[in-house]
Length: 352
Image (tube, rainbow, N blue to C red; front, top):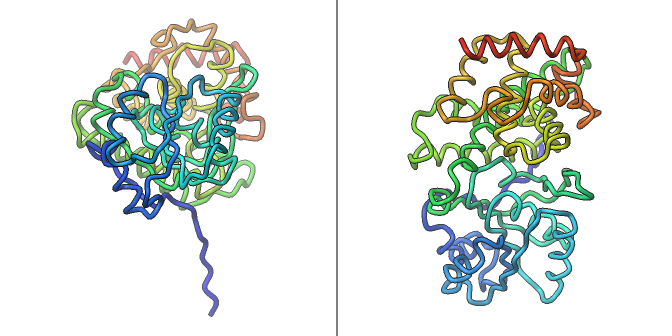
């Protein structure tokens, strides 16, 4: 009887704890990624000197590169610098912008990449996707999944709390994204990858049910693992489908039309809550709304400085950001007047 199985790419090493950055040399050696520490360390402008000082005792052979901007040009510039000598791996240390730049640059030359997250803004820390700006537009670029994912809770604790809270919104948006995926299966017979869906759902459910906040190591650890799980879900199915539906279409639309409004995770959570309302899923709406409120995340357009008309414009534009994706937004195909009425009903439901 033949046995059918599939191989999936996952990081060789996952470590969520305090003091991880200072212990990078041992982590890389134990993971058989680099025994001698001949790695390229990529940092953002805000962390450079501090990180270089911390890693020098355990990674004396490392070269430290500073990058900024999160653009495709910056990633290509970094990739060119990586040709200066042979490296065992590229280690990206910082927030999502720095990590994504390092991901792309490493993939250009087929180098193993280690993601060391100092914030928990979104699920890019462990995903096979790099979000980079090209000609003023943020695009998603496929890259190799990180060989290792490390989250240093010391850095997370000392980072901007609002940035870290955004990761909560990004994780729970998986609930809405998965509902959109099921809708696409029902209406368009789109296949749903059960393993990818399970990974994305488990992390979201864990964060929804977990007590505590960003001052609690137990909660932060669950959030970090949920973000990593969400990235693995994308790697399993080869797309962002398990973590990106109408929620992210709205997020990308706001980013395009009204740049600088709020963070990725804040907008993803807001978009997920609105899409859940559009589905008429009242139990989920209450659960997600309570979670966002508990963690001081936006639930209404006004919470991120948008007028109702701006949000209505973004909802109308949203399907254009992912033309191949079928979500509740494409399913309802609302006119501006219909969106306006739905938004008024949504505001009343949230206020209640």
